[in-house]
Structures are given as structure tokens and as C-alpha cells.
Length: 206
Image (cartoon, rainbow, N blue to C red):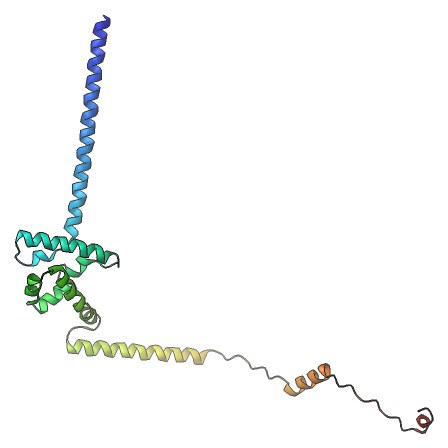
């Protein structure tokens, strides 16, 4: 009877052990899947210039390696590499390539394509910011500058009106001469001379 109980207890322990192993493998599989998903999401957000032209596998791996270094370096200065070079129709690099298609050949033939693309993007950035603010055509730029100048003039007029409408503080006129006189009287070390008694009686008591 005791042997039977021991056998059943051993079987139960063996089943529990196997269940724990299965649970451990399940957790490990879930963790691996989660890590892969996170890595996939990160990679989906990353941009690469190697997608912009035909390139062999060796060159592609070299470009990805350079981009990883550049991406980490720019991140130290709060600059997002992917935002600068992605082909979304809005980035500085994309605008430059649209205006000057031959730049793609320069990037492709470069010893370090990501660095060349970055240089193009940074060179294009001031022009992109200007066109976003004032427009791209001559007429748009003229009108934008005119509107900006008018706004500045209106603001200056408003400031002048505010200054004029502000009531002036009453000026208190000090009695300069009386103040000076009081100061001399209070602080002067000159004592008034005794009045000379010219009477006849004083003559005998001198």
C-alpha cells in the first residue's frame, strides 16, 4: 500500500515538474515573440537610403552599418536622422532629390551614401524652412514679405498708441530754494554773531 502511494506521489511530482517546464517554455516563447515585435516596430520606423536605388547586398549591409553609427551620433544632439532622409514628400532630402534628381546618383556612387544624403538634407533645410514660411513662387514670397511688413507696422502703431494713452505721473516740483535754505540752516556750523549793544548803559558795563 505504501509502495503504491509512493508510486502515485512520484507520478504526480513528475507531472507537476513537466507542467512547470512547459510553463517556463511558454513564458520564454512569449518573451522572445515580444522582443521580436519590438525590434520589428523599431526597424519599421527606421529609414535607409539603400531603398532609394538598386544596390547589392554587400553595399546594403555597409550602408545600414553607416546609418546605425550616424543615427546614434545625431541622437546625442537631438537630431533625428530618419526624419531628414525619409522619402515622404516632406523631408529636406526628399525635396532636394525631387528638385535635383541627379543627387541620387551622387548618393549611390558615394563611399558613404548616408553621409552624402545627410549633407544634402542639411544643405536643403534652410531653403525648405524659407519656402514653408514665405512660399516657393516669386509672387508668394512678395505677398508673404508684404504681409509680414504690414503686421510689424501695425504692431508698432499699437505700441505707440498704448504709450500715448498711458497717463503721465504728476511731477512734484520741489521748492528748491527753501530746501536749500533749510539745509544750510540745519547743517551750517556758522554761528550768528552777537548783536552789539550800542546803548549808553552798555558802555559802562563792557
